[in-house]
Structure formats: C-alpha cells, structure tokens
Image (cartoon, rainbow, N blue to C red; front, side):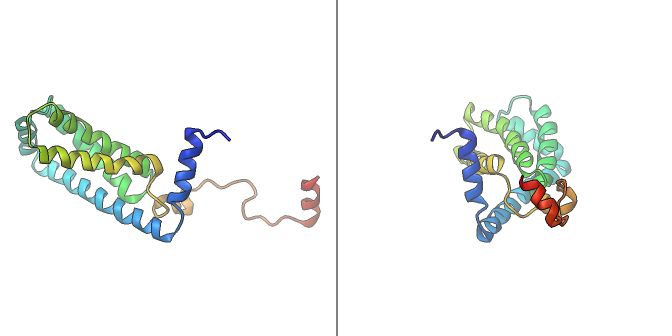
Length: 165
C-alpha cells in the first residue's frame, strides 16, 4: 500500500478529531492563540504609530506597509480562528502576519528572545493550518453545512430494493 501525502493528512486529521478530549483541547488552544492575536489587532488599532515605530526599531523592512497589512491579517485571522469558521484559513492568515516579523528578526541583530517567541507562535499555528481547528466551531452549525440529496428522508422498502439492484 502506497502512502501519499493526502492519505497521511487524512489519517492524522481523523486521529486529531478522535474524541471529546482532543476537540476540547483544540478549542482551548484555538481560543488562547486567537484571542491573543485579537488583542494584538485591537492594540495595533489603538496604538498604531507606536506599533509602527517599534517595527522600525527592530529593523522590520517596509514597517508602515507591514503594520497596515498585519492589522488586517491579525483581525481577520483571529476572528475566523476564534469562531472556528474556516479555522484553517484563519490560522494561515495569522501565520502570514507573523512571517515578515520573523524574517526581519532572523536577519537583524534583535533580541533572540523575541525571535524565539515568534518561532513558537508560528510553529504553533502550523498544525491548525494543516489539520483545522477541531470539532467545535461555527462549521458545526447546521446552517453552514451543505445538505446532501435525500438527507433525513425515509426510504420506502420498495425503493430500497430498487436501489440495491
């Protein structure tokens, strides 16, 4: 049996969503990370000029552009991530918001503690971007689910025999 990347990811996703304890742990982690990014986005709005000056201080290239894009990525990603509605997209947006800062810290002589923190956050977002946010979230609300044809409809015994032929 040949193992492909798709079958490996599918198996890992099934293992990850294996029970209530795993789903609860994913929910708690998603809330902790997402709310931290949401607080960051709200702080960026309130203290925009100070945030831009801090990015210039740690040698982030194109600091003004980075601040504007980062604000959008942080806010949109954290809302999606916390609600669990397209949590993978939210995690990817948050990961993208960390990348420029991470690149700036790698190529500068900035504090290694800040670099380690950015690496930890980026590394923590990767499993959510690949495997999703778990079972609890808005994606489980029936309004967002696609209904399949015949879902919930009782099948007459004669129709059942006809389908099996």
